Every structure is written in structure tokens, then in C-alpha cells.
Image (cartoon, rainbow, N blue to C red; front, side):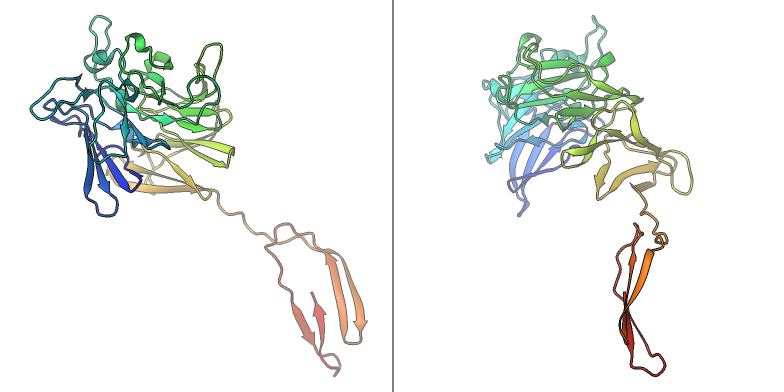
Length: 390
């Protein structure tokens, strides 16, 4: 299993690809009843081929599921055809984006004739095998990243859209209601954004306050505005705000922390914990290299790993490349030191009676944690106890 598990409507979904491309392998989804752990659903991306590949790995991202219960996955290198076999007559779905139902039991099928439920780039064969004429390499999985489902759009003709891309360095904007099938020049895609230098995408973008964020392989963290442009028909800005810091090998996923819709912070992890202001990611506002505790030297962060921010702290893991010993890091601000409160002023004492006085003052302290009233009793010259109220 290479992608995150997903729990939806009482079913736990597990997705599978290969281990280091060891043959044979298939892309598979197994759905288990969350209560009984009985297998209730299955899906095979390449049922007609022996070792048809088309793994579902998405750099660790799990399947995306919308409010209507549709599941979206992206497959990697593998067969794309309608060849039948003794065991199945379904389609082989290599290099494809698929929209799967979750309201069925047993084997999940996607009809080839229903082009609203699948999208395959027109260069799927080149993604698999390369192109010697144009000197393009193979092994460029479309499914090296997952799909991000964006909020409903209030302008334009496409209400339900999503974005995602793969190793070829193309970010696709697709209509979830009609994915479009296979067309020349990918005419069914709403928009295609080519990454600078064709840098690969091993990430699933993240959305916050009208922007998406992601860092391509060896590139720079990108911030792109999501807003319909009636002149171009684009929904995602083709021009990105980019960070000055360079992302590591395989790029970097993003985690957003915020106070509701304000004070957004973009966190990335790549042998360093880095933070950016979500309104503009040009320059980091925090950066700290990960060091092996007690030893020093680089503490390596695993590819595809994400930091998690909660309760004012950021949690992440790394490992010692020499010993393979792993560590959990917790980063955060130390509590402020409680100092001595500022001295009071304007102290006065008023005698209320022969046995009681009232003391008052101006409190000048700003760092106190609160006061508890104190009663002090004294016996003066044989008189009955009095009190000072503070």
C-alpha cells in the first residue's frame, strides 16, 4: 500500500501499487467494512493484462472523495486499452484520472463509454514509453500526484473542478462532472499549466483562501490564484508567485495552519522545516535545518512526508542516514518566562474603624497570572484580631 487510507461512509479504502516497480503488479483498491473488516469492494486498474501495472500511489496521497460520494484516483504507468482476457472484459486504465462510485458493492467498474467518468491525456503512450524523436523519456507517471478538489466555482461554466499533475510537469484543471475521456490535444481539459523546465510533480496541491500551493521536483514553492478569468477562460492563474527557496528532490508537499481564514502559514518539509506567509510565499518567514539529535549532521526527511501543525506546535519526522534511526520532532515557541511583576503605585491606607483598614493601589503589572485575595490577621497591643484586605 502506497497511498493514504481513506474512511468514507463506513468503508476503509486501501490503494495499492508496486514496491520499487517489482513485477508483476496492478493498481488496486480494496474496500473493507470499518466495523467487521470484511472485504466489500474491489477495483483493479488493469484487469486484462498480466502485470498491467497502472499503480495507484500518488506520492502518498489518498483517493479524493467529493460530497456526492464520487472517488477520484490517478493511475501511473501501465496499459490503457479495452483488450479482453479470460478473466475480465473491463478497460485497462493506465495513465488516467478516474471517477469511481462509492455507493456500490463488489467489483467497481468504470464504463469506457461513459467519458464523464475518466480522463486520459492524449500523450499517454509517450508518458509510458517515451518518444525517441522528441527525446522524451518514459516512466512519466500521470499518477505521481493526487487530485485536489476545489471549492464550487461561482463563475464560468465549470462549477466542480479539480487540479493535479504528474511526472511530465503538467498541471491539469479538470471538470469533475465531465472528465472528457481521450481527445486530441486534451481538449476536454479545462486548462493545462506546464511547469517551468517541465519539473515533475510528486505532490498534491493544497488550497487556502483562493490559492493553491505546491512545490515541484527541485523547483520552487508555487502559489497560484484560483479565480475564473472571463477573458481567457482559465480558472487557475498560469502565473505563479514563487519562493526564493528551492524545493528538494521529489519536491515538497504543503501543510497549512491558520486561525480560520486568517493568519495562514504554509509549511513545507525537505531536510529543513520552512514556513511562509500564505498571502505571499516569496520569502520564508522561518527556516530551520533538521539535525540529528545529540550527534549533529543532517537528519534526513523522507520523500513525500509532511509536517503537521496543531496546538501551536509543528510535528515532523526525520532519520539518521548512517544508522537509519528515526526521530519525531516537535517544534514550537517556548512559553514566555514569568518575571517579577512591576511594582504598584499610588498605595493608600484608610482606617475604617479601630479594628479595620482598607489598603488600595494601582496595579502596574502586565505579566501576572492573577491574584488571590489575602487576609492577614494581627493582634495589636492586646486588642482583638483585625484584618487587612488585599
